[in-house]
Image (tube, rainbow over all chains, first blue to last red; front, side):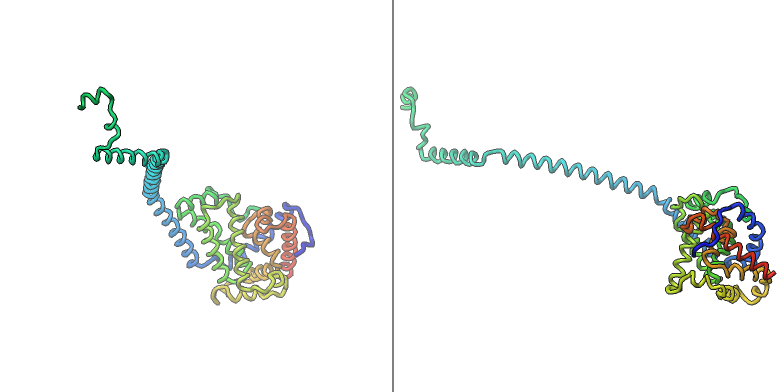
Length: 137
Length: 193
């Protein structure tokens, strides 16, 4: 609604109210306040909420301890996992650095040498120096 | 105008803080302080005792639930802001298609008849003397926008700055509404005297 009578003097309004306000308040007081049932409901709700707050406060230290323990366990577990993964990574890296072909060659050569040895065809034993040959005979 | 409520030893904000920390009696004290002014405002705005009681209860439930989050400068202004928001919601649900201003602007508004019909029982109705009837009739005849400002000032003892903030209107508009309301009331009460 558009105001038709702008009025900016708060003090003037309050002066006028001094006469009017008591009559208004008296009139409303005669009508009474809220029922006792409503007030009781409000008080019960207030007590229910504050009881909840108290319970929350009592359980707070336990919750805090549990949370701290859980955090510590998580931290330790995480650290252990990290170390394990680091070690596994290093091992994998070491294996990868060894040339697989050379490894296989070496194994094959030893095996061939063993077979030759069994058959008495080992080249190392076939050729002998002259000094060794005289002794061998 | 500070005639309604003398300055208490413990401020409203301190009581609310005490309640938020678990002292239920602090809220009892707050309810005691605002029982009459808040209920009178709600009664003046709804013109129905049952509705005013429902809203009164809901206002305090909100206060209880949100006490820890109170950060306003004035508890009183916060309380009336909650009350007004609930009143708006309440009216939206009840009369979704009728403009509040249209209803309140009509000078032959049946608000006072509804109030008379719903105020407690017949015994109490009989006790409502002429003076109270005249006052109530005059206040109920005010357009709603003027009535809410007037009752916030007279019953709630809110400052005009608090009223303007609560209603989201400029200070001058609040003062203008108050001035208009007072002019009408003085005229009507003088006629009925």
